Picture 1 (cartoon, rainbow, N blue to C red):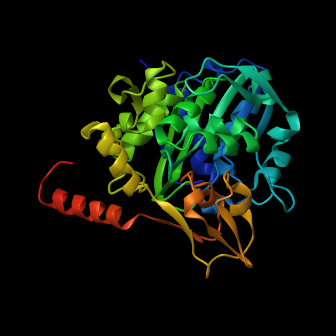
Picture 2: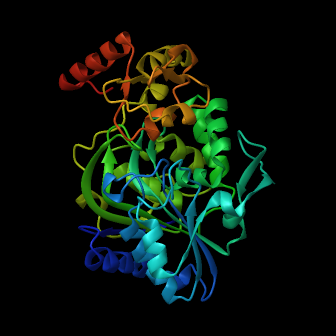
Length: 389
């Protein structure tokens, strides 16, 4: 049975987040249970490209990371913080506050491409090998600090998907191109997660993102920290808090089936707050097709209906600044120039939502096909009438 600490944290002020992180560690037996004195520790934050400020709720908040890093420093750890990020304009860690944070604490901050990547063999379900960060592989301990967010392709993003950032940017784009099916993509993410399991996962759920995450959703205060040696259990608890069955989250269920952690929230020992007392009422999920359809429909019908329900991106030209980030992120070239703006050629779009993820201007809107919109409307009416679907 996995143990998971669930602690209230009202905000990112150091007087709140510091004690809350300390309490989470205490409930898990202390940081000494995970990190020996003087150990080489890599701390993997969730730091999407292009850069964004912490108040946008896209990256692991630097004040949250600071509370973890300060306790690691107390252990005398040799710390490296990082993610694989890219920016065409200046320091990719400047706007998020991570450069100032690590300079203040005297901690090394690394863009993973600076440390290089090594090709390692895998016995994965979708990958036989992967180029993985040397900095992460060479660390004695890896601590993951994911951000609690919805995701327009994987439903939720958390501990499992956070380790996807240990692959080089080009390989991540290639993975989106190779695995356009949600189930295949989830299995690939679990392949990557198994390259180096974190010894500790501490999730930033102080402010969470609902709706069309991981960059274009709506922020809401949740006031929580989740921590465990079992990252899959962290993802399962996050799903339960949002009102999902954790087994309907493809990355969580796949990781649980492979023995990387507990996806069954009923088998997780939750200490601190009770899950039932801190549920996120009315949490708005992403609009991706629900795993419930997969369970209830024959394969052929599921394939048809999921194709109708899937969102496709459209560029809203009045909001598009012509920055080109969507063009650079698209793995198939479906996002292409249209004069000074951009457009998406739907015949080439694989629905990976990379363009939606990188747009910081709200210009990439997600739309369903007309019949899919009708299915959603019919589902809402059926639920109001008491039918369970």
